[in-house]
Length: 188
Image (cartoon, rainbow, N blue to C red; front, side, top):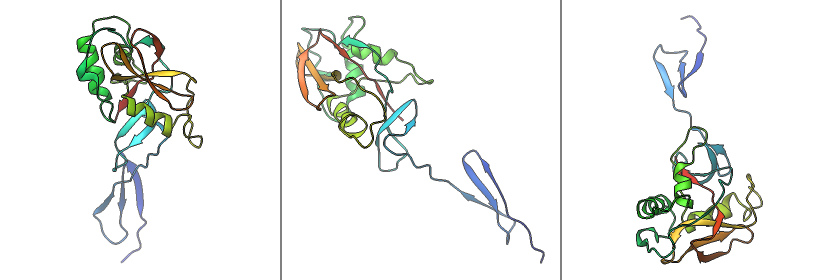
């Protein structure tokens, strides 16, 4: 038997290596390791699921100050505070509130790095952003946040919705007609 060299090359994120002892290629699926704080998928990763392949990113920038919108309109389907409810809350706001230039529609209209599926985070998603990549985690602060209030997609009642202060991590219920910072998120 003659000695043959091993040849390796990368093709579509799969590494094919020809074994020195056999002619059939062996396929290796490289694990791409993402971490909280990484810049990818149009934003900064602030949550990863157990597989480390899916999660949520937050935009690297505020998109402006907007009112939550529709003061005196109860949008009960946008009252979920829990993690994972931001997209449903945002869609419920957009379907029920016809007021122009509000936080939810600003997120839905936002486009960045080819991504256009952004939404307004729920209260608990905002708190996770604060704690994981915001000022609440001094070890992994990767993007700048204003030391002010940010709207969540979570309604309290017909006149109020939740905000989170990115200077201390406090939550409060503020009137829907006042403009506060908006920072969209998206899932991947």
